[in-house]
Image 1 (cartoon, rainbow, N blue to C red):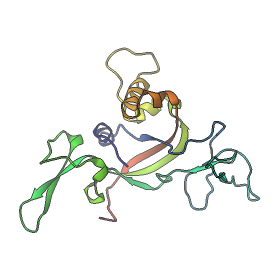
Image 2: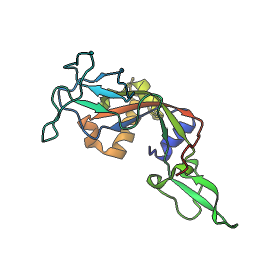
Image 3: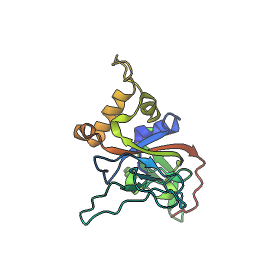
Image 4: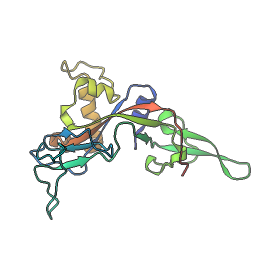
Length: 210
């Protein structure tokens, strides 16, 4: 999962324990999320309340040829479920090792404020071995973007503005500014459905170096 430098610093400081990501397929207007916590595959499934099977489980949607879900539409979180782990991608730079065999002797991360050795490698191109942060998912839910509370905005790693703001919007106002700087004002006004991923930092054990 990609994070910008500001959010990486917030994770390192212990201020950021939530992230919101836009659902790639937006639910229909009548979607009312219900979590089915009894799925055998332990994935994070969310459904519109509706028909259940003989065992009492909500059933995922059957979509028509146009990709439109019925009243039982269902969605699975692409980032994982509680207990799954995510490794963080961020902008970095490898410092070459001038001894043979050729390799790198150190890594610099843009979030730390250090200058690059040559050019920065964009976060999208970070390989697993270069990642220094691993996150474990502690909670998953879906909600409308603007439904976040002040506590949620604070958990997003947001700091309040220096000037006075409307009471109750000390953190949300800067979250709004951050969101619009990434996705645009129109997206904020559209109030899309988002995945809300709660997490904690865990030891960065890399099982797969590829």
